[in-house]
Structures are given as C-alpha cells and as structure tokens.
Image (cartoon, rainbow, N blue to C red; front, side, top):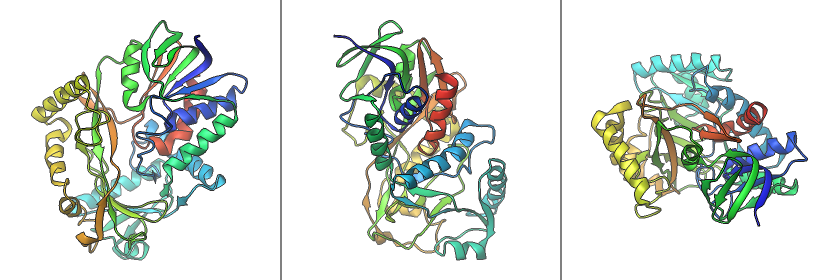
Length: 397
C-alpha cells in the first residue's frame, strides 16, 4: 500500500529536523514524514559535528551564512539552555601568527562588527588575561559568545519533540528515484507527497539532479579528524583559532574545548574518495569514487583554490606529530604527549561549481516541482540551523 503525507522530508539530520519543527509550528494540522537511509537520526554530518557554536565572525556580510549564523547562534543557545542540554559557554580567540595575519585580524574584526557579532579586538596583554595559553602577533579577536554544544543531544531532543507532536519517522528508508513529481520510490516502497523537502546532506545534490536541477555541480568530500587531549579538562579553556585561509575556505587547525570540557586539536581536512568514506575501506562505491577522483585529479593538476597545496599539506597532518606541528603558532607551549587519542572522523562536503570552477561557500536552496532542495548546507549549518529552517519554511513552504 502506498504511503501518503503532506510534507516528506528526506534526511534526519539537523536541517531536516529543524525544518520539520518549523513546519509543525506553521502547519499543525498537516502530516509530516521524515525518512532516512540510516537506522537513526544524525548518523553523518550532524552527529559527527565538531560541536562549535559559531558567532559569525568569518562570513561575507551579504551572505546567508552570516545572516543565519548570527541569528541561529542565539536560537540554538536558547534551545540548549531551555532543554537543559550541555553547553560550554567558553568563548573563542582568533590569533595572528605574523604581521600579515595581524592585518587580516583587523579586517576580520571589521567584518564581524558589520555582521552584528559581539566581539572585541585585544592586544597581546589582554589576550594573555583572556586565554593564558594562546599567543598572537600584535592583536587577536575575542568572541565571548562562541560556545560548544552537544550535537547528538540536540538532535535527539528535536526527534523526541517531533514524535510527540505527531511527526512520523521511517528509518532504513533510502531514496531511490523520483517517479512523477508527487511520488518517490524508496527502499521501503513508494511514498506520495504534497511537497518534498530534500535535506539529504551529502546526497542532496544527487536527489536534486534526479528532479532536474543543478547539472553543473559536483560534491568534494573532505575528511576531518581531531586529536584529543589525555586530560578530561585541559589547560585550554577557550577555542583558539588561526586566521582562516581565504583561498581554501577552511578554518584551519585549532584548539577546541567540547561541551564537557574535553580538549581537542584539529581537524585534518584530507580529500577523500567517497562521500561516506570515514576510513580507508569503509563505504566505497565505485561510481562515487570515479566521480570524486576525476574531479580531484583535475583540481590537483590545475591547483584551483590551492587544492594541490591543501592535499600535500594534509598528508603531513595524518600523524599526531604532524598535526601538532600545525598548531604551534596558536599556543605558547604544547607537548605532543598531551594529545594521544584520535576522535571519530567526520566528512565535510564542499559543493564545486564546474562551470565557474569555484567552491560554493554559501547556502544553496533550489525550488523544484513540488519540492524544495537544500543542496549546500555548508558550515556553519548546525549553528545556523534553527534560523535557516525558519527562513526555508517562511519563504519556500
């Protein structure tokens, strides 16, 4: 028998769950079904998230990332506190390694102020009072509102709330194909819907393509792993970040205290061979690997957005000693033996525009036939999720 629902959400990560929450509030009498190919919620990017509640320092002022990060940060903070979910309100400093980066620090500070971020520009003496372990060249940025959240606990609470409100969930239910614009085929049979919302994360582009959208994009997966301190509560009380590399659009190796105070350094950002290739032999799919390798080989050859330089640099971070070396510009003293255990790997997908030959560094939403597709939910997607979901429901549904 064919299932029917008003709203069909594909993907039970943080974006799918927060959109379901907004739909419940706006359309309490309509039916909502969330499906996921895994056995439970948040098995990939959402559940393997670094857990940093970003303040919105980095993002271009006219971008969706800046808009939703600043608003979403407060919403996620309030949700965590209201539901008694662990939240480490530790703050963050961004430091400079040399004079050139000091100039970038000042530019970054001006951007943060334009974005409406609560932050201050501090000198070396003030930095030593805020975070004694950190070092900088000239100036640093202090962001008191940056925090650490419990990613899995937030998703679990959302799922509990949604189920209580009547939202249905189907797990081990993989999207297979679009049938006619009002019905899809899944691994558990056909599902008819009024509106489909594609929140499939690392496979959102594939579903969008099946609906006749985004022909000029390919997804490049980057695997990140953190190295954990052997003390539960380390000496590093705040997040310590470098100036981000504008060319490769990654935030770089940093120190982070988690929601429970545990300290980690990283992450790596190595290009990997498949979308869910968390370890060397895990989740290899030939067609996927062929597509990813073809794109990565071209980028290695052309060195677009410094991809070749990034790939070779990442090789050096695959050992504990190599990763620690990349963090020495951030702190006054670090001992390799303090960091002993590799964490659970995560994968950050980056959407690459083949026509423009550039990484898409903002959210991308496309409307299709009876469908809405969240194609590029780029970092800080988790921080932005509550505000982003509100925007999607108000403007697309």
